[in-house]
Length: 325
Image: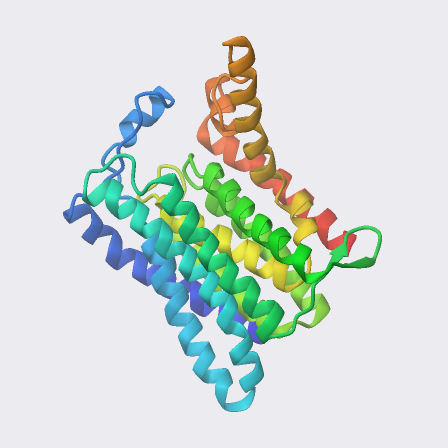
């Protein structure tokens, strides 16, 4: 059995066990979701479902990352060291989401942390991550151009802001995709699988290892997140998964590939932008509701159909993405 499969299965089992332990605790503490009155009426029945489930992803990812870090430190210390920046950006983003969820759910502050404070936290983590790649690990400032099989070498003064935009944009796009049982988890797991397959093709062991960790943890969480969900991930989970995707993509020099493989989060983001701009100009809605998954819900699609269709689109885009490199 290959090391990738072993890591994935171990992560899956760990995440599943932690889910079984944490979900009843969250339910006893009454850490439940509060559905917006402005959202789809079908979601009102979900009020009270445990949220902040991203805690499961944080704990399971940390446990597996720590275990594999010390395991590889003995024989392949360079691989172990190169795991650190991806662990940092992923867990760091998860913690920012946790603080936001904590204020919303525990402190009953419906606004959570201010957008400015949230963005400052994400940017601070992103700056440290990009700085580690460029100045500590000497990963270079070149990015791969899909389909053309060429690398574009950017000056460091241009690469750093570009990388920061990629990380923040990707994370917020994944965050917007979270709104239906299992949707964000399913879509991001497929995207992470695509990036991990590319890591295997390129023989980049550290991203292969970390990709398998997050995929396994997400699949364990997905068992309880599919419709009807027993737990929601909250910003804790969506920001963590977004950070993992952006972190691995930048490490592999493949940020432009996200425009292909992460097509669903991209479209979800565009739908919100279109809705806002169109409403400001016409005082009418372009979509029945944004992000796009709510539009399809209000058009008569049930949640399972939305998740299935969006996942299939992501799967096809991911296959195209693998062929593009």
